[in-house]
Length: 78
Image (cartoon, rainbow, N blue to C red; front, top):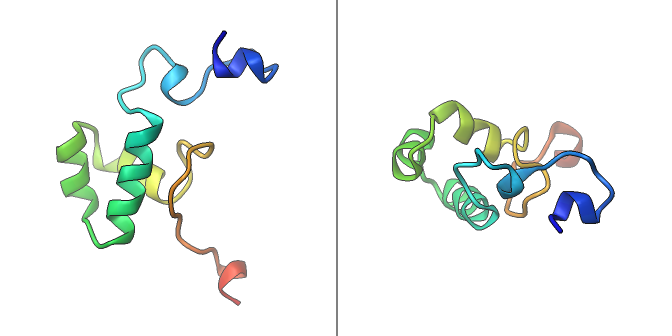
């Protein structure tokens, strides 16, 4: 049984999706590399995805369920 079905969701997310190009572990690697200064374009080339996808990953708009460091929001910085 996939993670989505086990949690009562009728949709797949992350690496459970058949068309997923990245795994949850790779998402954590990408977020950690970006937090340590890697550039989005370099990460995109390394993982074979677009810079736009990397931007969504490191800013928490994509793969929200996966772990890894995310930038602080304005309310968290105050």
